[in-house]
View 1 (cartoon, each protein chain N blue to C red):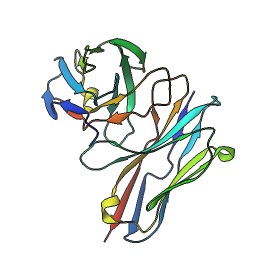
View 2 (view 1 turned 90 degrees about the vertical axis):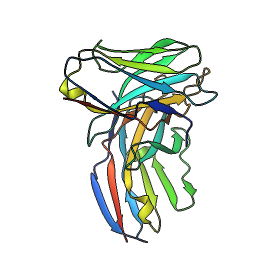
View 3 (view 1 turned 180 degrees about the vertical axis):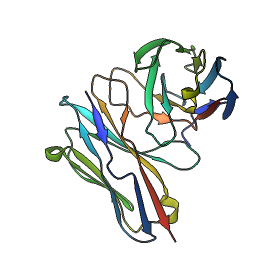
Length: 115
Length: 114
């Protein structure tokens, strides 16, 4: 196990609602990245947080937002949910300290279903 | 722009067969990193290996081996004497030196039958 935890494991929401997903990073890691994985596809990068600030963003609309806390845990918030937001949301933690080749270790994911 | 292609969407083998999963990548960067992850039915992505672009030495870890060839932009993964527990979706991913995101391929579903 990686030590990266995510909650909840499963979630069902209806279109238009808002959702918050949570991630606790592995001990010693200061960076959290979020990915969306639609069924049958590879994960797509949403954004990354480092030292409580957004440190890069993929091609996702502003209704996808995040936070990182002083203990390096993180939240992913999605507003105005759409049916296409149904996916597995993966959180990855890594240790970033000036080097860029650090490995990202993933949590078990949160499965979100939007009805 | 970066791109990772895993042309094999699904592979089925019988236990103890050897199997190779292909990965072809595109990047303009001279320094980059390649990864393989395994995703069992539980959903968690399990890290298998990281390879730097300046290190083309092949690597073997037990029944797993990786063949990195910059000349063909490929980073293939071979499982020797496959086992049922190897059944999973395998993803190849690319990260360039100045970036912070992983670019994943579409994955290859490996089914190992007893």
